[in-house]
Image (cartoon, rainbow, N blue to C red):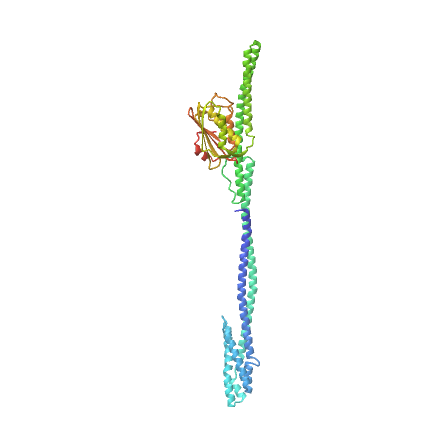
Length: 502
């Protein structure tokens, strides 16, 4: 996971928890508040009904009109009393329709209903007694009703509703406190989770950084020379990418180190052989100069001319050695001019130089790639040297076959096969050394194959051969890619099954 994603996760998880907690709190608060507000609205409606019942029964209405009807016997009071008492009874019935009524409410309502019903039933009695001519005091005694229970019940309902309303309002206050503590708790939990995640991530980041520091310290101290091919595992983020790059750098350094070691060894051997091969013509020069002096003393002109020519030959040989030596040493310093190389065109150019050869030359090119990525001049020098050697060390009829293929892993593989004299297996390594030949016969300084090997190596490839004396010789060589990465070893080996590599 990317570091940026980890850091984003560190902030998003607690924020998400806090957001979810906040939304849940809002939902719970709203739901609870709605429930409380519905309860308060119902209590308010009940209080309104109680107040309306009181008004219907109170002064100028209901019971008051009932008593005036008893005293005065007028129909207007009768109608007024009946109307208000019936309304009061309807309001009591409406109160009964509310859900979840308490026992106290039911008992108080029953008392009110019984009292109102009693008043309504007494109206017809009053009417009958008035018709009979009874006086008011007699009628009052007959229809008198005790209002005290109803008044008490009305008070009980009002007190109960006030208590219920206070309880609901207290719930709102308690809810506000609970929500406050709930949000604080969520915030603290989110903070703890954020700290925990931060600690975990920072711990892993610190471990990754420490591993990278140790690894880079090992590289700086030269421990990269240890051939440990196991990549370091740091993490799954950008640090791992950096670790992989450092590991690749270590492998590159190790490869460079191995090449430098090999180069130093080659330089030592090269210096020894160069000194030895240059020393030989110098000794010959000294010997011929002594012979020239003797010839001068003896006035032998023919001998003088012969020895002078030999001095010239040795000097030219020495110049050839020095020229080839300079060419060989420059190869490592020259930069490659990588470009698309037309392989078949290069082969045609080289074969055009063989027209003056006294030997019969048959050259076949099979399956060679149309183009490769290489330094054209240096690639031409590789093929030219191998082809010239095939012609030089073959009989009068020379048959040369050039094959090639593109490797799946990158790079190209070529084979140059001839029907020449062959090379002894013990000389397989010797022929790639400067100034060394498989045979003492032949022209040249013996540095050609050493130059070929070096050109191939700086192209990221290698060269090896198969040979059987007096039968054939096959030179295999691979050319890498511009990144200077060697082609896959298994693929190259499977393609050629080489007997020996250099």
